Amino acid sequence: MEQHAHSMDDLFNQLGQSQDSEGILKFIQANQPLAGDVRLHNAAFWSPSQAAFLQQAISDDADWAEVVEALNSALHASA
Image 1 (cartoon, one colour):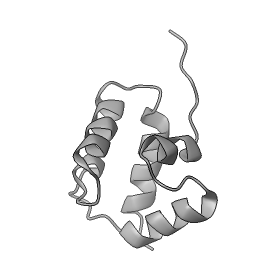
Image 2: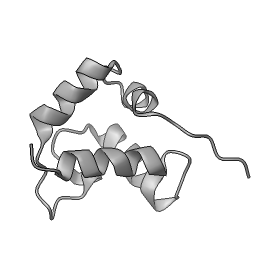
Image 3: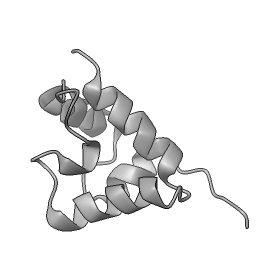
Image 4: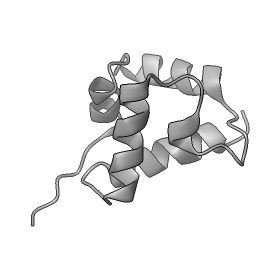
């Protein structure tokens, strides 16, 4: 099976968020740091459909997994 490399811009577009670099940076800054015990898909700022997508991307080790993990790391990092 061929996997596709998705960018952070692609992920934010998929999540219905602003996908330009400034919008992504503002989103991350506004929502970090995410507490260490909060899984990315359980963060309060996601809609149910966004949370389901993020959870499935990780659990299925889908094409999106790498960029979702990058977002997870960015949100758990200290500002």
